[in-house]
Image (cartoon, rainbow, N blue to C red; front, side, top):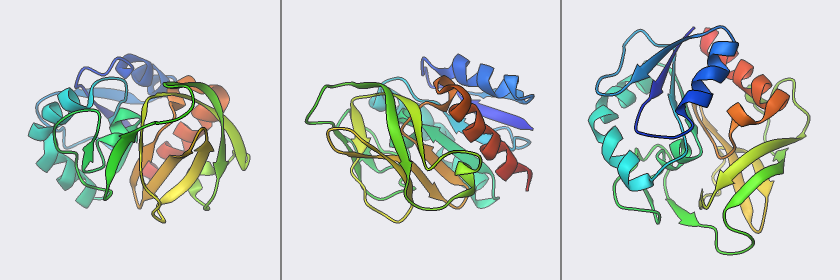
Length: 197
């Protein structure tokens, strides 16, 4: 499989690259133009919303075309936030794939960092091979304020965090699968399985 990773300065880009390479995939780094031969497109997730929103503006049409063609699109942490319309973290427009905005966590310890219990709440093939409750690794101060039916898993912190959203082949996760050990690796395998269909 050919995995494209959007380069907008996210500091976890190389760990995501390594995670997909360990599973036997070819990696393409996407900067200014979308490579039409990729099977999976990933927006990684540690950085500033404003900078990232500005960086993906030039790729917006290509991303939308990729989704319309049925490509698997994965947003991780900040990448998930960019799938919404806007964020309190900074200026700029997200992709609007999910309606609503991203808000700062207002209670409990901020940032939410470390391993958290993550519970499946709606069936999805992306959870194949995983327990209903798994532990995934989180590192974030903002989260999507959202309650739509696309939520497939949640983490209970000081508030309920949408942990996994899925709309057909558009997938967003608040956790970091590339830092989540065996559970994270199984989740990425399920992404690859979806892309092979």
